[in-house]
Image 1 (spheres, helix red, strand yellow):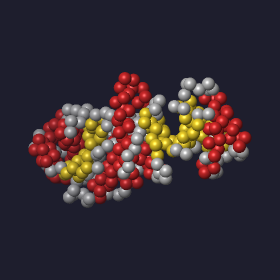
Image 2 (cartoon, helix red, strand yellow):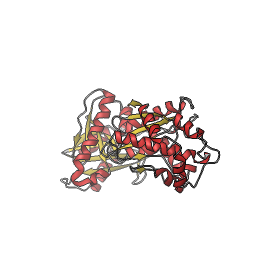
Image 3 (cartoon, one colour):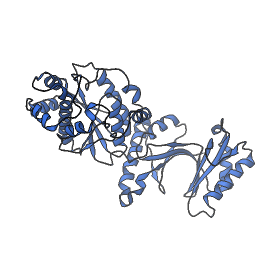
Length: 390
């Protein structure tokens, strides 16, 4: 029987007159990722609020799942068989293909979505197909909620499409359907999750990592490259800016006129300045950070205010109200946690004071920054950057 990948999208269906724009972005992303992996052309049809993708015989089930489950904008997807729209014939087709899909299942349910042209209701269609399966000898108990086996049927365009398993997508909005944003990323747990959250809203994320090398080893940078490689699966082409930051930190830490307790805040303000410079270069509309309110000393209300004071463009903080356990759960889901928890000497902790300021005043920070050649430091760091493409 013919097989298809049947894809449903989520909230973008509410876009009204702008829907075509978002459909185009989602279609391109699906096609781009599949063709990149399988090196063959894919035809993607939009039919009555869903995408239908013909699949060749012997397709790699696992690879398709891995790719499509990371495409933002998809609510769920199924591998369907093409059958008849006649319920009696369709019931027999479902039965004939069922054996390999029912191992260890004790309960089942039939779910039907049907075209409005059909005479019977969805509920009546479910009852009829379920009765056919039981008549054929299906030795399982019907269960309306929480069934082990859910047989999904969609009837449209004169065909009945059925599957035995539905896979969840990441939902959200299609990749690159929103503006560009620059995300400051480290090898830690939080910032990769922040980037993912904004990608899921359609932002095209450009990454910037502030490297402490040669004062840190290369481990953190390698972790960051690997993490960005994972995150690149959620959008089209991806860029990572690697900015040398060790000299800036050392300059701030060895300027005796600057109180030690303010160092971290000055580091963060310098990072924001450089990230803003990269944003302007790429016509991005803001900077993303992985800050969570009150998690560490630099993330108190006063300190966040003092750090953000330096920026002239919007700063997005999608994790601001998350606790650590919530962040870790998302990191595990997207595959970055195992890398982020690996030990390494990170840039953020380098040259940090034992007792950092927790309630900074902007005036005190501005006074401290008078002892720095800020414009030259920002420009030099920007000029020495390295760009990695994915």
